[in-house]
Image (tube, rainbow, N blue to C red; front, side, top):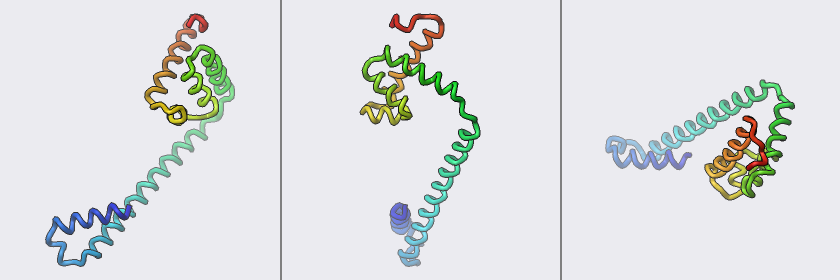
Length: 135
């Protein structure tokens, strides 16, 4: 991030003639220090947000029944999905996020979500009483 500050210093030094009464190194060092400090502040905000998120996730007690039910649903859906859907579900069962599973399969996240949403629609239909093997 210091490089960004340096480039900003060059731009300011060349476009604002009144800065030429100072040595360029003075302007550059100040700009680089501000850029690095801003980067540290942004990283600290990101870490704090991640910490707060993880605290909320950990605060919620695990629900083994819900987790097991989700695993069963995914296993059922494997039997009706096409090859791409099966591979995505297998990765999800291994703990991959949708984005990670899509990347591992060499497809866009949008395509992965579309494939998984198709299976979700099938599952929703089964919840309304349709036979899952009709598909």
